[in-house]
Length: 68
Image (tube, rainbow, N blue to C red; front, side, top):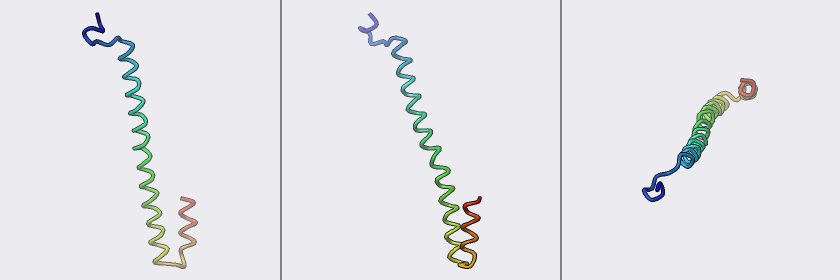
């Protein structure tokens, strides 16, 4: 009778919810990886600008960049 009205069993609903939650976790991990990428890009941009302005301190800046 459940199939006639279009209702799903509890097990089917649980499986569907589990799949949806797993997909949302993957999306969350992808979005979480964007933040550090932007931060590293900003730091690298600052290093490039400082190396262009002061070539004498470029090596020191690079060393401090890798340490920090």
